[in-house]
Image (cartoon, rainbow, N blue to C red; front, side):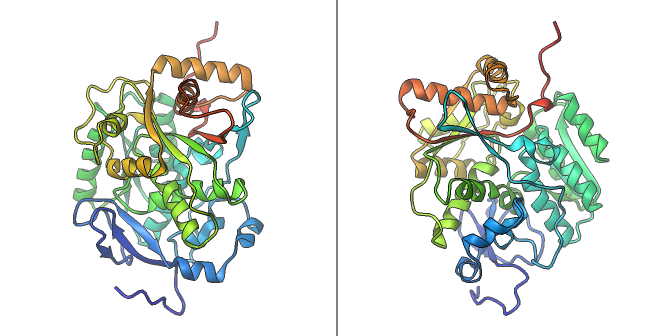
Length: 392
């Protein structure tokens, strides 16, 4: 494939690349997985980007995910499908001033899923998709429904029947057709894939198309900017499908490639619960991929209920490259932490965010992290999307 940049590029994308084989694909149409059945990664003319834009340009732009437009795949002349994807704040703990919560609950539909769906649905509209379909543990479905509505594209969502009621209501409020599934997200994925193939729908499943990852990687750009073009020492991230985890690492690589950050990376920590921890099991067993689906799944934390993530190989690669690790915490400790943080810090964490804080406190005790290190804990959704304690 030619690496010559067109005189008037509609974006700075050079090609799509199979994450397993390295095979190149053109980016002139919608695509799913590679021929090898692996996720496709978007590659850019990074040298050209660094020639035409500087760090100062980004600082001066509106603080949202679209400030990173040159690093995103949407044609530059096209208006994105946007619901106001703001830069999310870093909130320091009062008792732990070097520990920050990256509060993704401020985004549209109240979760980090807005980042990926904003870009993926914008690209689906660019390619004239007739309809969208997505399996979900909850928040991805509500984001897909909202952005599908904003784009004017019919959307189908397959969600476990025990998804929090407020999320199922949110999906239907935005006009999507919500299919309630007796099973987990893997079963939802099977049904969504069948619907896509039978009805010509564009499948937005995690890593089954290349553009949700591009939206999620803006988390990494934001962190670099918020830490003055440096990076924290450790990042705790709740990991189900792992798009944000992989996307952050991709962002760091792209920033280093154009010389805006150095080679130092955070230690990446994948956080799951004891009732669904396939990543931890594979990591500690020394595997390069997740060999079998975790069973039986028994956790109340919806965002990590992914028995066998498609991006398992990429997640494990990031863990090892960063010198990080994978961990799992109990549901009880997670809910206890959520309640305690609400009272002591005034922050209503989602269960996934609370699980990350439990993991940090555990690592602090074992010495895997120390108090002098700068740490970012991801709160991936607004706590109001999860049932709160009953009134006394």
